[in-house]
Image (tube, rainbow, N blue to C red; front, top):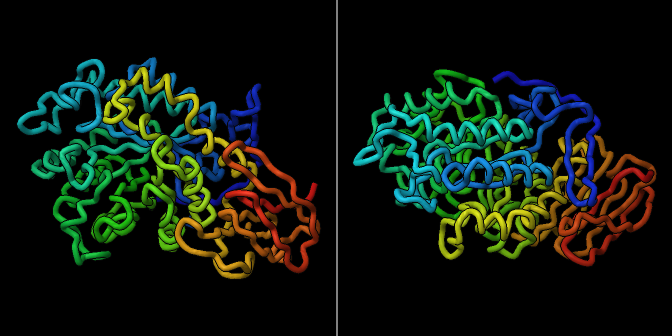
Length: 466
């Protein structure tokens, strides 16, 4: 893959009339000009087509292709765009989570393949079905959004909600044909391919961490070989099981490097609670040449840890410069799954406008800085306070040029080495991603140390005093 050097640009952070919704793009650039994405020469983050750093600030509408009409898709995308969301993760084909019967049909009663039973005909596609996927990809691109598409979701724990049995029994040639079809159809440049899906067939890999291939994982990789036969520059990643389930779970790199040529984008998948995120990310960001992002953690309306912003803040300040994805416990399946099987219309009406708000606030703040310069500081060079463990881990990060720093702290006082920063006069503020507000602390010289005490879980933001 060709790599480029980053060009620093001024980011335009523009609030809407109500002051609550933000969009963030390099000044003068239009969203339609940012694709395709590529990997920066450092291997730490992504670049857009204008050679500017690109941060994935995404959502996870897994069932969008089967649960929503075009009008509902437009409604969903408009809301997310207005909040600064620039990426969505979804299944190209669905097997477990829709309101239709059979479950793989979209809302118009269309199946993805002309033959679905007893065996899927991977080489015979139903064009009418794929027009809905076309609509999603095209509408996302028009809004400057990247689509992380799972071609054949494995299934939670290799369960019946995924396509493991179907692709496991298919011929390599048919799966490669399917991959080539996807690559030829989705040439818009705003697609990242996601293999696996809540599982990377970890059972077959028992005792085989980091070396060799596994039968079913190798079978699904035939789809990637088909994609690569058409285009070699696409970004390819994967979605494993949650950390703690299987030998290669939690980090995509562990599953899809050795023996799987073409993988080039790493990610981590944490628990429902963020107790493992700093540890997962600390390992993942050491993978030379593989930018890393947080693909999932706790979901809104289900978990209580700051609606996922807690995990994302820890991940980013632990080195997740690829970005982060968030989710909502009803919107991911759009009302098709118990206990919130209320249907797509009700799901959108009840949850859309009030969701992804903490993420919106977090990324509006982050993108107002040259975030790609952030480097984790787990030693005592920035924060001398004991960092803690698990979900209470203090996560300090400093810009490579010392121009600014950010520290996530779980309502714990921290001692900061002010001389780590280069501005002679340093402004200190607490940032609250819950409501997007800053609380001024004071102005300090860049000498000695300073103790900062938050009133709750906060991000300490240090930069040059205006």
